[in-house]
Image (cartoon, rainbow, N blue to C red; front, side, top):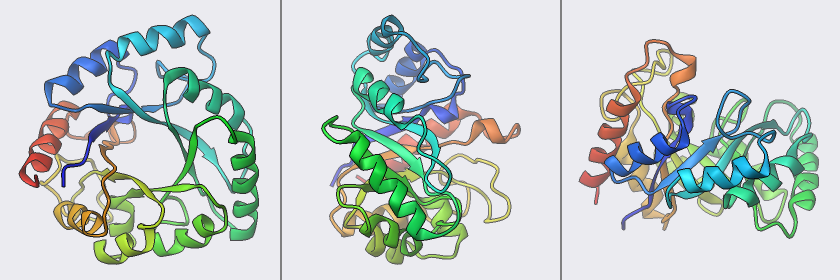
Length: 247
């Protein structure tokens, strides 16, 4: 099984989209997940003309989704604007964080978010993140709202002590995107070239594929949070090589 490969622009903060496309093509990457933030080329404040230009600059890359910073435990303010941006850019999904706190309140907000996005063609995905690092912990949220999907961040399940097999089994009914990244240990999370650290990347991919996952696999290199992160292009080259080796 061969999965589509993507990169998150978290790894190259502020890089013009035409340069993102050039970098992706260099390493055989066909998809991009666009980080939405005021400091990035893509955010809800850009004009219709800028949105059209962004699609041209991306040069045919599949915009697999927009990475928002909406936290379901806090508010869904801005969701409609992000859905509109996703439609304008041809993105099929929005990434949401679960946040922290009572599952019931998170499920209620997620349900309201799904209603707001209804009919848009944009699917809402919740990531293993915040207080819900494991697949098992995310299941009550995912199961509570029909139509949502999951993003499996392999570093987070690993640092929380959940095995790839257990995470895959928990998330399989909802899994849309697999995010890979590498680091030395659960406490030393400086971004490394994939394959150079301790995250069980090969085992994670095998576990997901073993349960039928054929979706996009995205490199998420956390450059903004770590000034000493390995260079993004080196990480991208390592990611592409690792994925090619897995077939």
